[in-house]
Image (cartoon, rainbow, N blue to C red; front, side):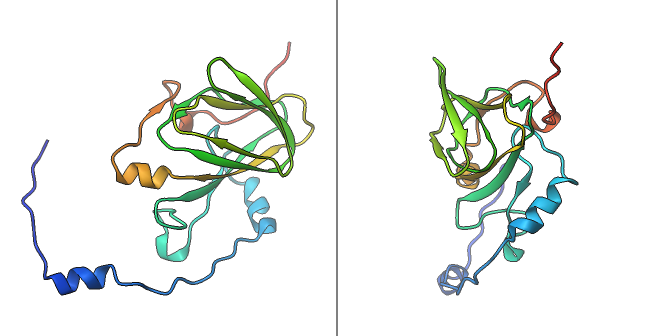
Amino acid sequence: MAVLSGATLPYVRYRKLYSPKQELPVVWRWKELIEQFDTTAHTERGTLTLSTADTAGRCELVPGMAMSIQVVRAGGRTRPHAHSWWHLFFVQAGTGTMVLGNPQDVVQLSRNDLVLVPAWCAHHFENMTGQDSLVLMSLTNLPQQAGLSNLLAEEPEDGPEAVEIVPIETT
């Protein structure tokens, strides 16, 4: 590993870097988000992540926290995984099940339900009986954990980016 030499800056400049600034309100229109669903890949860990103009590329809505949208199409499911960040899931639309922990507990989900999944709790979603997509909003502290160099996960070897959620074939 390369080792860098440290640097300094005047204390007054340091304080200016962290001086309070007025945050501006931000709105995301649900109708516009839904329109993006048809042109965005629905991977098993997410579809869209919200960002603001001043944090584009970092996706932190407030320091250390982000919000993503995950779509599990009818007949689809994600694979079990666990990681060092927590999720607070809001069921925006549809129905399905969430499988939690080990041993596994199955939780039925429907619109307006909320589920807190603590760090390192194994979890995945199934939408095997619903006619519509299961749409989830997920508030998470992934950016905080990344900033602490604690972005650890137990996931399938090919990773979440490799698998798009598609209906399961039944033969």
